[in-house]
Image 1 (cartoon, rainbow, N blue to C red):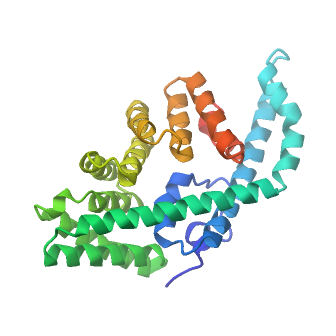
Image 2 (image 1 turned 30 degrees about the vertical axis):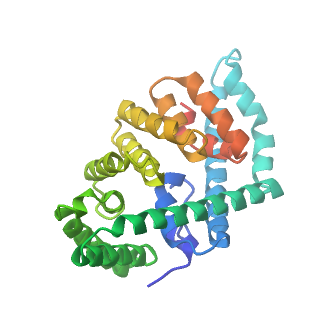
Length: 294
């Protein structure tokens, strides 16, 4: 059965330590969001959890600072400013609300672009493959809007149908089918290695078009590599996406994470500064992630 959109991602009692990154929900949100208000609601809930994670992380840093020599200037500065930051994080300002609304409009525009790309790719297919693609997409979207047993059954149907599409010599060249197979491998089958390979196929086949699916495929492939601790590979993949979409906030943010993981701290800081200029709430995201506090 369908559930309220925000509860598709966050249970009512979800603890803050179960922090979700934007990429964890990005494509799912694009598939099922019907209007900007739903996306704003999702972002507000995600921000609340990030805020709680920030406060917990800063408390941890303060404890470390209290055990360090006074010359450890950075940790002591963070510890001393923690109360002010805690207070500011408890107020969602008009600036934040405006930021949420702008992000919602961008995501809805991307949703429309992705649908247009998928429609164009369907045109050359014979009836059987076209029907399989349509049914696979319908099952995927229905599953994304459902929960529990219904969701599992719909995702199983979508997985089976996409597999038939990709077994067809022509269908095997459809990079949208590969991307959505990768998403199902990741979210439904929990098979990160196979998800990485599917996202690679999607990025390879979409490279001549260099469209939004190409950027998304590179970004998701990089995240699968990151989850497998292949940080250098993740950095290489996200750099390709960054060259394609140099002003995309989320790609910049991921690039900052992977740059930090491979030891390029100055580059990571530069990218984070640009992200904060674009979306001020990035500073909360940044302090909520251990990757930027190590």
